[in-house]
Image 1 (cartoon, one colour):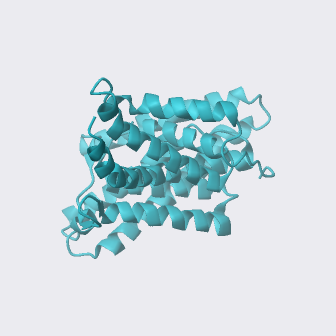
Image 2 (spheres, rainbow, N blue to C red):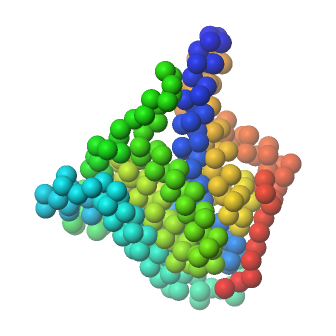
Image 3 (cartoon, rainbow, N blue to C red):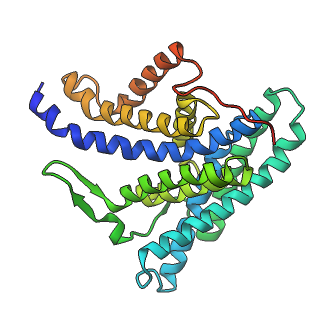
Length: 293
């Protein structure tokens, strides 16, 4: 085991974990907001999130086809797709709540949960249908905004991209806005999911109808870890999960002599989370449930 290598890569791994954690935190905000108001886990939130990503990529592809993509300032383009993604996902969240959840408000808790799973599968197939008819393809790549890919070299061993900084700043701004405006609304929950979807697409590039499932599952775990219904808890839970994954992906192979690689990062991260929740089942900051809307 090369101790010097472990020390050398630590700052970059720490930074990568924080960036990944903020991405999970953005998605977790939607889960925790719905639970905080309705005491209900919206398992279709991962699809509401990824629909925001598809709205963003469609606008970018349309701008590129019209020859406008390169001529517009990137902050304006980013703001445009963020607002559009938030608007569509917010309206979708309200529609889903009224059609699939509100009629079941007085039903046993298992019934709305089954409805949410059904909505999740329905939205996955709806995305696939629409994109297949529209583009004959549902694996879409976000057009590259060169300015967002620019990297700042902080030290000889640490660098960060502009888009990673955007993710962190956006997450912090949304946390602030939630406290001021939308922490009690269903449309706010969906809008946060749409914004997270756009930033996910910008950060990772490739999306498909199923891209929201794994990030959504991890974000839900982050929300539970931080304290379901607790908005600051969702942020902290996301960052903790992101750090666990990043360190496991980078250090497991080095510490075990190659016996365990990055593919075991999820097992490691979730094992630690299980241990934390055994000793603190209400999460790091505690569960919060508000008065029902």
